[in-house]
Image (tube, rainbow, N blue to C red; front, side, top):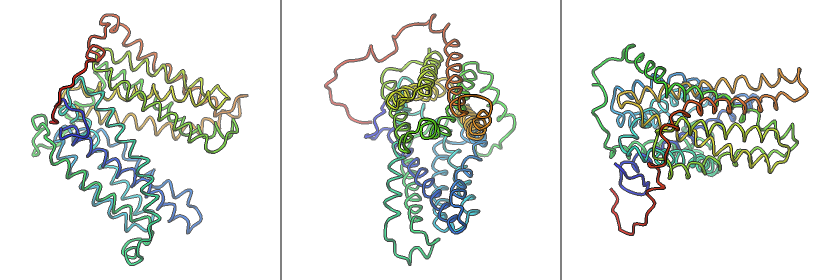
Length: 441
């Protein structure tokens, strides 16, 4: 239960490898689906428009996350994850035969539904295989496993797309050489489900499979989520921050290339700096944080750091200053993510964890979706009325919104940290040399 090593025979390593393989399959499927949609669109000369079809198909199911959380609470979480991986194995395999946008949209839509059902179950089962003081470290490794597979999946897709696949094989499918990646993805999901068979999930916290879903159970999860003060305050702050952070990805490229006149590669360097900051915070926090009594304060502090650094970045004109500020904002963002997920896992009743995470992810995705849909329009509208460009106003305003959200969290946790200040639970007091050999679980 206490081991968080990925190269071992522990329950955590089983969950980590399965999750990483599942994430790899998701990334590769997404890249290949976008490329296939673009390929289909080339015949009509509108590949730029058709390329967004898989993305739209994956955004819409976000509203079902709360229902997915209820499923996680009613049934065995291990079985849910296995069934979702097996379902995605069959669904993704059909992409090998997809030759029109409607078929491509439907398959991606259904695949994302099973991904959403799997996610709350994975988050809810983590406290069953990891001790409370190791949750931050565990979630750090999970996040690294998820996002480290992104570039690997991208590279594999690029390599596989260049394979000289015999035409006789392609003729069985849609004829596009890149579609061979969907077969690899299906095998990835199969391997993920196979690994999960060795997971020992606690079966005492879910309802019998014969029970029907009810509105009362769904409402119970919503009431717990919104009436628990600590969870509600953190969720509101993070939702505001996610809305503001979405502007970075929508308008960041325009800010660098149009407003400041940097090259196209500048946006890639900015995202790399942001990701490096997230990785740095994960490594740091995963070692030193093991107590959740002051988590509201720490989350608020991380948001304040993110808001200030982003505001500095969007007020700067020197590229090196922008990169350093974005790196610092990544540190704050990584802290917010790790601490929030770990806090929800540690503080939520086992029988309600699925619904809490389902509601949390649903609200977060809606905040991002609203940001994607409105920030660009808002920037264009503000261009007409102010001396600064609309892009600069929206980006700087987003940074201020994150800062304000951080202040809310900071003030919420201020009283608690004054009453309960100390580092007695941190790993500073546990640093020691131990040369004894230990065997993996």
